[in-house]
Image (cartoon, rainbow, N blue to C red; front, side, top):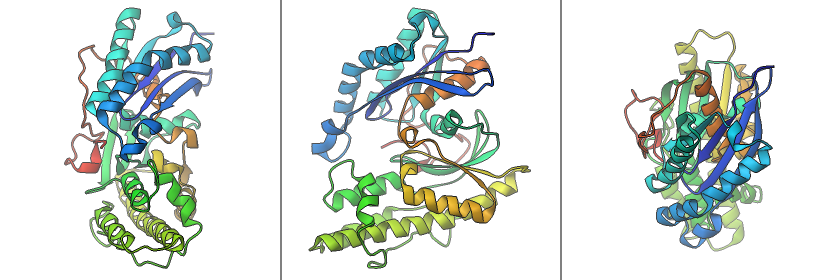
Length: 357
């Protein structure tokens, strides 16, 4: 039995310090041996958002311990590791630099290959951690820093079909939560509050709903929430606004995803229609349900990563590292951190295309 590659993944693009070891079984299916994530929610809560300098300091303090814990939990030894993969972008540069520098130093000390990973590519391939996923597939990446539709043709080949022209969807969730008085990170709480409210109470705007192809916009929606929230006087009104916001988001995603289906089909000769949803907002159950129903209507196979792999994590970084290792796609130790790094580098740069805020 041939030895299967063992990859260490390191993630520090924003406010999670994470490390993971993965390998694969005899069938070539990835196996996650460990996936350790240290959140910084308590550090940033009082500021209502991530403070880059504090995030970087926390990464520096924790990364050695997190990597050691990931190795210990995997049941493997340091010398068993075949390559080190670290997130190199996009993200907060002071945060990226911590994990990237650690990964380079670790690879150099072990004399093992180093692989610089695009964080977005980690999300794009994350469903491969729990399913046998074939190319091509349509990806909807929805998180705090990214909202875009991508035609994923193979490893390293991506074509952007649409993106947000302003705010990312996760950012809109978090800002709405903040306006409703919910502590950071409040985005996931919107779904809970919405269940108590009347989704038809407020008629909220749907920017570029009838134009722009499958591009999206959430800034106008966020502005409307700001205006209405100033006049809220009861909990029920708060619940109703949360429900109306979520309903509006679902309507936007339904229409734009349907348009993206059409664009995806034009670009590919498809034997199978596959739709992948990844990123932190993919954990929202109502969004999952709506998109599953749409896939049933349009004869698409819907694929979601496990909820615990929707947010930032190192298993998805190690997953990309594993794919690149098998193709011997390694990087030099002088590879820079890239705060902006779009998957489709031929696409016109827009805010939601490759930058985490």
